[in-house]
Length: 181
Image (cartoon, one colour):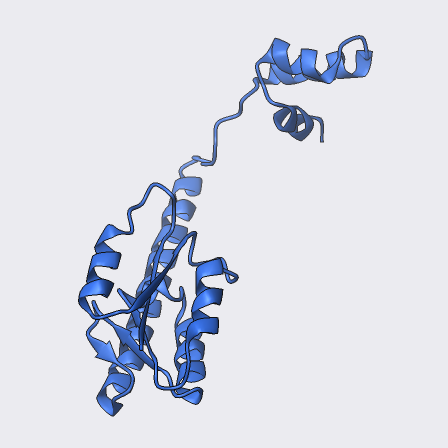
């Protein structure tokens, strides 16, 4: 049996494209998740693991829908192979039930990880260059130095409730406590 797995990272994203492709590929069941791939325990993925049996094939739209790193993908492919389960990626046109498919899977996985590492290195280099030019980055401060001083005085005075202080400064309770730390 062909079992499909589709995932999007946020609720705002649409699963339609993946679902259509998986149905067209002949998947009898399609399980979905709407959460980041960096989350290891995904309910849909857990259900897929329980459904798969020897002789089945797990069909995914792209490898990055299954795992975020080469290590994750290799672990998945190895576990599936041990259980006699195939893995097919539609976008990469790879079927790990064949020798050629296994080879191409490892090559694509290595290239994908290489690309992610390059992006990370470029991002870090860009941040370093910005810092060297005096740009600190990050979110702007919600409260000015004067407002921070006022917050501490109001809090120490104990005449005002936390809710009142938050209302006066137009901030949330977590923000208030962040500035008190």
